[in-house]
Image (cartoon, rainbow, N blue to C red):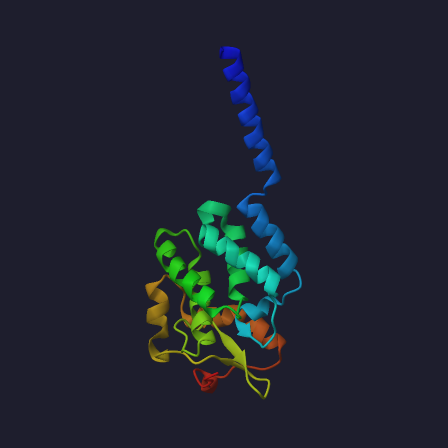
Length: 201
């Protein structure tokens, strides 16, 4: 009897291990998906939005399935790098504003415990607001005008942008602008103070 039970437990254990080996972990699935998609994406598109579509219908379905099954993959779930990769995928899913808004809201709760990157949260929040035609809050999103100029997208109460950024632990807007300046310069179109908040989308 004991021998039979032992054999059963061992076979069950082996079966679970085999299943786990056959089904890639969430981290592995995200890494594989992100590495395949993001390898051909201009990272400037994360904050300088164009009319290009980077996420096809099939990949969008995979991204949405991960969100529906796991919520947003946090740092504690998949590690900082993989969590950031998944954020990039959602950031580029401009065809699914509802998903972007839902993930942004979820991240707002997770951010309190430090389980998501606050810069990622701010950028996705601004992206989702921009995609639905609302002013952004944190000044992370730029657009290309019809004339080809890179402009800061319309921003709510621009005079108090640093207070909003500080409230979630972000650096001053000026520091952020300096960080992305090389990408702006690469397009050979300087962003002037007169352009701030002037583009309504």
